[in-house]
Image (tube, rainbow, N blue to C red):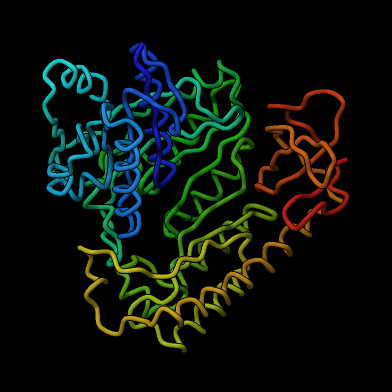
Length: 433
């Protein structure tokens, strides 16, 4: 029996695809081992969102070949999609599998073991005739929460982003296929599903379907108790969208709305398709229909041309919105994007200072958001047992993704339990009693 090891780099969509490829290998008779072990096949699902991601992808590919020079090294995903010619001449790589070709993993391995010649399976991802690549999961690695890829590609072309060139145009998964997977996962004991995509808000735009309708249909699936959404574009949050979602008790009031900047001038240079006012309107709509929704976001600091005044506008904006959590990124040039050649690039030290300011602000807002739940009865889906400050607890999350811990003499794995949040155990975890 051949041994295979997989390593994932990048986003939740990549993680889903890596697990799907692992399931394919298992079905084909491969024994899956950890990436640090000696294997016959190494599969690295690469990332290309930044220049650093490209470098990490190359490093992992070379590390795999060094661990076992006789092994077959498979480079899959975004890095080889955008840097195909580099991958072709890289002696550490035996098989190149681009996006929309990952379903061919086993057959490409069979071909290599038969012919022993380098394989390049990269297609023109920007061909508008590309269809959604069907991959499936029955038993994800997480025991309570299952990520489901329902959409691929992006039509936005933000000035700092390479992903439309790596993932191609928007492609939506057939709704029946999504519902079949959700049903299988529920039958296998999963109670929570997370809908993911490269640009989730675009689900169905090319087929006449909508993200809202997909969520409504998933809501009907027996066994699923929670539906969580991946990253959304602000303008998808309309009165109808929020109103209809609020009627679905399984939908978690936890919304990640990508911001990137709270300054209109910066947003325009980024080629984002909304204004700060439109973004704020989306947040207000969510708060109209949900009593205390967890709203999280991403912010890029130090984008080319971002003056101190523009940064101050963003800082004031995020404080006014009052996010649950913020992911702060220092802008880094991505070769092949318009932003990489823009004038007025920001010094690295200025980026670090701005980043530190927003991180500190984000930590304070996060504490204030969690504080709201002290003394309130909440329901958590527990995931695992963990030791915290020398004591054993079961750890889980509320619908708003507030992390809680509960002491119990009986196993709580994959159990929905109600209790009162009585105190902070640490800055991130609240005690449920």
